[in-house]
Length: 269
Image (cartoon, rainbow, N blue to C red; front, side):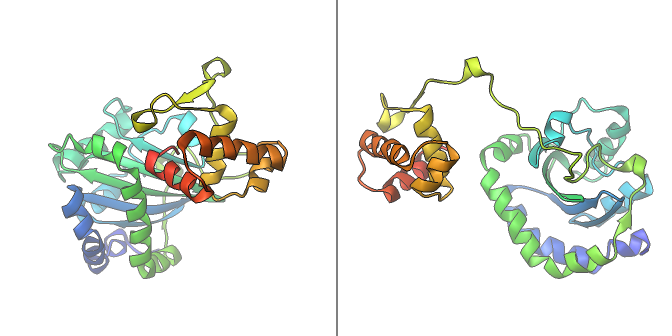
């Protein structure tokens, strides 16, 4: 196994900072980490702050400095904002992260796969309180950067994936990758809270969609044909076409492409 000080290679860190530079300047972010944590205990990590990572491992801090709530950790993909009400185990790591390395307001993006989970962590300066609202309102930018980073850092990812670190069990997160015994739980809205009408606003004020029409729009946004939508919502193709026709009439458009444009303009899903 590569020693910690050599694992967090100075030259790799320089490359990571170069990849992150424009993103950091544009969005006032000052820290980024990309990692995979495998169920058997190994991991690879690419981080923009080498000194913090050395400090983190030398002090045997937990891999994720937060206890992720169970209702989140059963999902395939989820986000988590670090809060101050953490257990003592995590507080010292958070204190160091903030006071020794000027990183705070951690935003985690987790995605679970068979046998491992992947995470990206973003951080900002402690005084940058506005970044929380920025995270919440610009998920698409952070998702896009995740793919950009994985593309630009691909060679480093390949190398480190072949030379993983081992994380003791007591420092691993409280969840794992996907398996047959680790079913994804999907939370749903209570039946009594399901709206009968989905009311629109702005220039579509007074217009509403039924639940079935909303289901049709959801699958249309994913690129499904009318026949495929019919199967998904358990109706005949003719009924699915009828739902689509009603939608077009309500928003005053004539073809399916215009409906897709409406979905994007209104940011329905």
